[in-house]
Length: 429
Image (cartoon, rainbow, N blue to C red):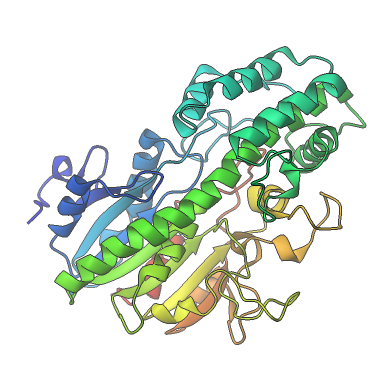
């Protein structure tokens, strides 16, 4: 049994317990020692929380600690909670403020701060091992900001090679987003305008056009990390987290598992359902906090293509309880930048402008799932949640703080959201 008598037993910096981390590499392979430690947790209910993008190890630990803190006071007397923090290879851009973790701040003007600081450059090197030459070229151009019309095509080519999306290659997949295959100057201009719309920089038309374009170029690099993390999160969920939890449930059939994910971590926990066998009942709830994946993921018929379903179409039925998608209109990362990262190369529309095909579940909730209710946070807390199926909860009344360019994307450490998780898992007093 994991000792629950003191904070030191819970893990560095974690104030609840019993707590353990479950660690995966980019291929979804689990660290055996962390798997064994999680298997030793004595609990009736296991709360499994996957962090999202922009999280290094210390930030993830602080996030777990703050998010888990309210739960001991919310669950019923018959519930013995165990806590698991899912750690997977993400990346942190230290210049993006996170509420309650970093000082608030925004980009002062177009192109300001485009040079990569040492921490970001090191994080990129760990994120893309063996790609030092491309990263050095990208970093040098962002620091020097040469004449953009001449230099941006080369910058774009380096970024495309980082994500294996170079259009001159023979292996370019048709699902590569448009930001990696269209003209780099056009893309950087669109991204600069998106930054202006998110409050992070003035418009290209109003500011120094060259410097604004380099601000858009840095955002293109950020988009590359989003694209890579989107792919990685699905792999970790389906081939890592899902099988680990299914195996654990086979050994301990009475254990109730409650999945929670933030941002791309919501994709991790959701894609873990692909590894849940039909008829298995160990996953008792799934709560998505500002989920960075398609709002059509659980749909069995896409509105714009009735022949196809979402990537997780119908898999909400593998949860013996509700799938709760918390969303907020104050999340600029999902309102503005997720659609840019998701819009496909074959789309005839421009890069900017809302197109619901590319919307995120953390922006406007679950879409195209018949019968899925839509509730305000207050109504969900007052009247409870459905016993099963998808439900969208507008959490904008609390998820509302944060600086440019991501807005309230990381503003998730609220007791109200912990109460949603408790309600979804039927763990309350």
